[in-house]
Image (tube, rainbow, N blue to C red; front, side, top):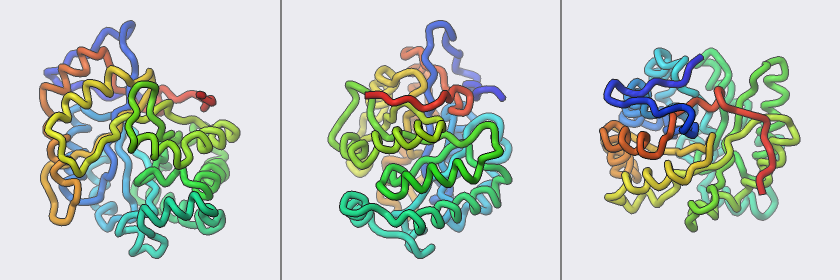
Amino acid sequence: MHSPTFGTHMLEPDRQKTKNVIVCADDFAVNASVSLGIAELASLGRISATSVMVLSERWPQDVAMLRPLRDRIDVGLHLDWTSEFACVAGHGISLGAAMRRALLFGFDYTQASSVIELQLDLFEAHWQAPPDYVDGHQHVQQFDGIRQALVDVLVRRYADQLRKPYLRISRPPSGCSNLKSLVIAWMGANALEVVVANACLTSTKALLGVYDLKDKPARYGHLMERWLALSPNQGIIMCHPALAIEPGDEIGAARVQEYAYLAGTGFAAALQQAQVRLVRGIDVGTPAKIHR
């Protein structure tokens, strides 16, 4: 399998001078505009991964948009405990409550394992294959109780699979931290990395793309240029694009702004300037190592 090609107006950088970066669009299937926007960006070669919210009622139908892209992008599970979909499913709680539970006594291991198995079942039922990777909506994959259960489920469930799903470590690289990204990392990035390494699974090296989505910054392009410059080789930049603002979507304005930039010539130029090549994580994954 090959990494996605760039759009016809985008020249691929010199491979000897480039660094490989995964650009991942989160929240596929959260609503129609998000799914459409992600599928369009994938077809243009502007993203190399997308994370799926399988508890959404749209997943069984929106999966059709991803099937033609199967060999061009990674498709992963966006493990969900804190959305309205999770509440309907019976295990959902608010992000604040989830953080308090993780910090005070951790999630129940047995219950967490059941929730993870359910979401993997829903993913595989419509994708007809295991996820290429697993991350988490609002980074719950790192929370105490969930992280241990997740790694154990992946090792057990895919024991016979040569290439097991890789995991996202939500921690900023040196020089690219803000308060929000530091809090995200503090909620278990180091601990998840240790669990992943001990299980001989693979993980991404660093996460960029964290900013206040509700502030609707008008300078998303400048943020992306900085992330591309600071990303380590095999780092991951997350994004949340959509074609249009859907009713009730609190970050809808930011989503539309992200889509417009990622689909445009500015992003193409930024990739060239930063000498970044978009790649799939399954193409560059190596056994997880502890980075201190």
